[in-house]
Amino acid sequence: MNGSVYGWTQAAAQREKIRSVKAHFRSICICLTLVVGGLQMVPAAALAASKGSEAAGAVLFRDKGCSYCHGVDGKPGKKGPNLTGLRSDKQWPPDKITKQILEGGQKMPPFADSLSDAEVADLVAYLRAKHKPVPPPVPAPPPDPAPAAAN
Ligand code: HEC
Image 1 (cartoon, rainbow, N blue to C red):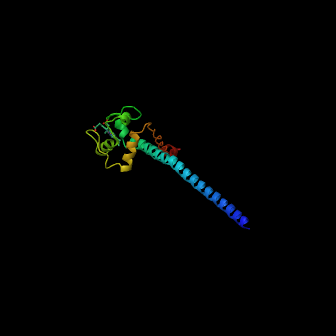
Image 2: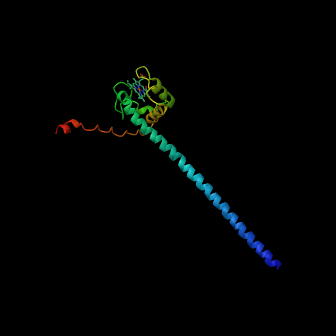
Image 3: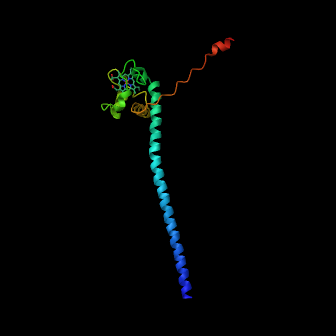
């Protein structure tokens, strides 16, 4: 009698122990999954955000008239220095680029009134991009309806 009770308790205790080890193991797994998943997610999200910003900056650079003066893709512009190498130019840290865009320079107009903070940040991201994204082509203007109407 005594022996069987002891045996039962021992078996139950054993089961309990296995269950707790299993639970413990499962929580370790969940933790690892979260940590590993988190590690992968953070840079991916940051990268996606900065890529989006660079691409948006590329469009702004073209549409806000920057490329008229500065040129694009290493091609010289009409009135300003080429900015292709700005990324590696130690004289132009991001905050100085931001200031130049907002306040302009001797021959460059200020853009503080025509660009939002986010747009300026996108332009800086674009100018500092390792591989400058090419903006999508400007959509072709709709065909002139006049000749069609004449028919
Ligand atoms: C009317 C022509 C003109 C336009 C438009 C223009 N810039 Fe400039 N930019 C210049 C000139 C000229 C300089 C050289 C410094 C000076 O005169 O301010 C310059 C300098 C810069 C510099 C500093 C780099 C250097 O080596 O001097 C940055 C960054 C810059 N421009 C970014 C921009 C951005 C971004 C835009 C569009 C939002 C823009 N510029 C629009 C003419 C222009």
